[in-house]
Length: 307
Image (tube, rainbow, N blue to C red; front, side, top):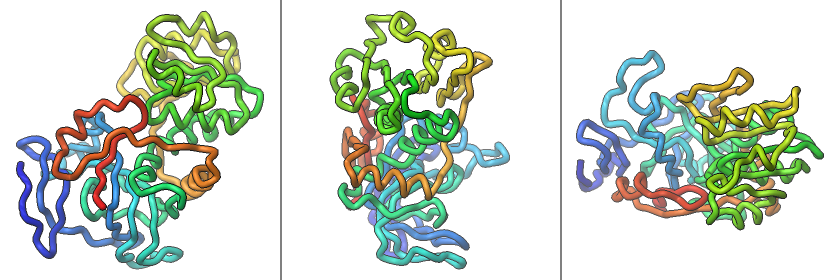
């Protein structure tokens, strides 16, 4: 696929089609009941998303028609609202998520349920806000929602420099937990800055020799790392993972992030008070989707910057 001139009623969008990933001009969406239309200023990039089932299959498992617009987190402004929408208005700067099975956010415009957006943090730009929703909510829902992590507990976080892991370290620190984190050697100092009390180079050391009787393990890696993690938990400890498609030990709880306006508001407040920090690693235009999806962030997440 190649770029085409944008028509008055259309928009430029990253699109996945029969010929692969490219940039198209397609019709601009309209908000349905309960939705808002967003002028997207930036959209986060999750490279593995192109392999997720909802990218190519609908809720009933049938193939989705091409072209499919990927991406489901954004920052931008409300342009218009659908029926039965209250509490938000055109001109509001917001960030949030939209439905996994809808056309995505990597476009000049997208729609999203009004209940899935929140006011954008005021102290950061749109590009930085766009890398927050999926990663921060995943960390929040794993550590607080499922594990009720509290002050004085010991948490082990795998993949601590990744998009989700870096928020997990910061949220655990904010909750007053003792944090042990695994990362590669070149990210150890970064993870320390985030607030980890102990860091483990997963290539050089086995975390089982460092961690004993953890209250919580938060896993973003899967595989052997996940299996070995069950042995470092207290008998009543909790093991949660976001690694899909992996064989999991019986005590591991897998979950998928859910949009939550209230949590987005809380996260925005923590961002604005400098309790949490977000990190953009790579900024791309809609005209360069292959580079964006091929980018390997050192830490944080890449974005499509549209404004």
